[in-house]
Structure formats: structure tokens, C-alpha cells
Length: 259
Figure 1 (cartoon, helix red, strand yellow):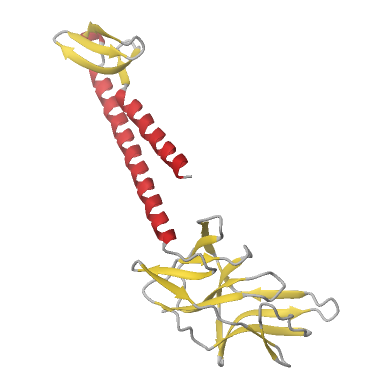
Figure 2 (cartoon, rainbow, N blue to C red; figure 1 turned 90 degrees about the horizontal axis):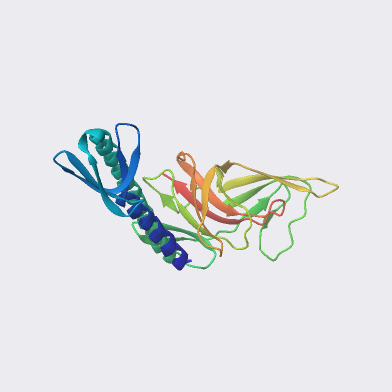
């Protein structure tokens, strides 16, 4: 991967160098010559022809020097911009790789704040219906009930506070490439509700309704590391990053609060 990246960068630089090394000499009759350089010597313009690889000369009165210089200056500015853009892309890619190296390979949710790693603790979620509360464990059978319920996490406020930033970026190392989302949590007495659950009495089919936040996501590695962030600023309130299997009530939850 690194070799291919270097080859691509060198190819772009080489192409830009070649483009900068040649330009068009415009004649007043509309003809052009692809040249490496030219010099005005009295009544004559001498130029090195790229096509014929030799020096040639023409009367200066036949050459449109103003158009030649204007076109060459514009091309040089374009090439300089392309070179700078490539340099910026290379710097951004280098910075991104440096960030990735700071993220643990263990599944979980992380942030970089002032270049320091912040690790979010996973919290258990609870299914609450009229009859009982059932803590969701990874290897336990799903709770069996009919009707409606809510998926809740303990406490009305998260201890993971994010201040001065309403579009926080997270690094999510997923467990098993299941769907993930940022959801709005609704505080109630002693808990925060992440979703509403309905179970059909006969089929036992489960439907889950959650208030998700539109996010951008970028896969950073083939091991399941993603960078995620909200598309729009988040209002102050309670949120959670969840990884889930639809219809299975098996969320992994990491909570946070925007202040």
C-alpha cells in the first residue's frame, strides 16, 4: 500500500514537472509550437522545439508574445496550484495515518482530544416493559414478552461530557461489522431511553424505533475502524453511539452528553 502511494505521488509530481517544462509559443497566424524555452534576440525569437528537439528561430514580428506569456503564466499558476494541492493531500494523509496509530485495536469507542486519547466505557442496556426489566447480556437469551417496551440505559445524564463542540468526531472499532449509529437519548426518571420496541404477539417479530442522527462515516482500516461524526450540529442533550443487529435487541452502547 505504501509503495503504491509513493508511486502515485511521484507520478503526479513527474507529470507536473513535464507540464511545467513545456508550453506553447503562439504565432500571429494561429500556428503554435510546443517549446521548452524561448528568447527574444533583437528582431528574432529563438526557441527550443519539443517536437524536433533542436533550436529554431523565427522573425519576432510573427510571434504573438503577449498571448504566449499570458498563456504560459496561467499554466504555471495552474501547475503550482496542482502541486500545492498534492502536497496538502499528502500532508492530510500522513496526519490521518498518525491519528489511526493512536487508536487501540480493541473494539470500542474513542476520541482524540488535544491529541490525547479518550476511551469511552461500554454500558449495559435494559429492556423495560410493564412486567419486568431485563439487562441485555451478549450471551443471554433475548427477553421474551409481548407488546411494547423501551430500551434504556441507566442515569438521566451521561458522565461523558463533550463541551465546546457540537459535531464531535469519534473513532469506532466495531465488533463484527454490524450497523452502527448515533442516537438521541430521551431522559426519563432515572434512565435514558434509546429506543422503543414492539413485539408481535404471534410471530414474535421485533421492531425497533430509534431517533438516529444523520452521520458521515469513513472506513479507516480493513479491521473495522471507522471515523464517524454528525452531519449537522447536535443540540445540547443526551446521545449514544450504538452498534446493533436490527431486530435482535443486542446493542452495544457508549453514551455521551453535548453541553
